[in-house]
Length: 247
Image (tube, rainbow, N blue to C red; front, top):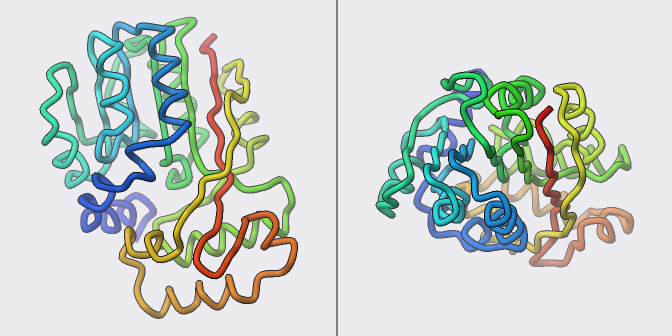
């Protein structure tokens, strides 16, 4: 099964959990994205990997039209239930956006880049569909710059969700953006507090993998515990929002 088919298979069955989750419906990163939309007042905004639509809902009061695109039909069903008048929902691939060149003023992507098998292709597509001077806001979980900590958290993420590709580092995202011609700056870095049981329940992680994750966290080294705030019931993921201006 290829990476995109794995994403569809994984998320078709958990769309309701993502629609209801406060991890996705709230957050300082969502507030920051909404504030950028207020400042920009875009005519046409595109939210890629829109899932249950939380970013699209935040953009809608500040744009003439918002398009939410996702690979998984069940996620779009959840987003459609809100009935937002200026929101159009479309099933599609973020690495081959079905839109004309320079057709959007504003593009957002939140908590989905770690599922992209070819993130450079997504960044290039975002650059293509943005008008000159348009803005991309990229928010995602990221790996620390330390290689050992990078390996540890990506191993944990893959155990929990087989459709996971990679938590990139902040520098890796900046390099991808620069290669596509964007002028990027880090808008926000923060730690996302997660409850372990909720984290695995939301993704319907099988019991054997939950057990493997519990063992991984129980055996975490002092550096891993410090880096990810590991406790017997909670931990933290590193997150970023990058603001990138199109050429």
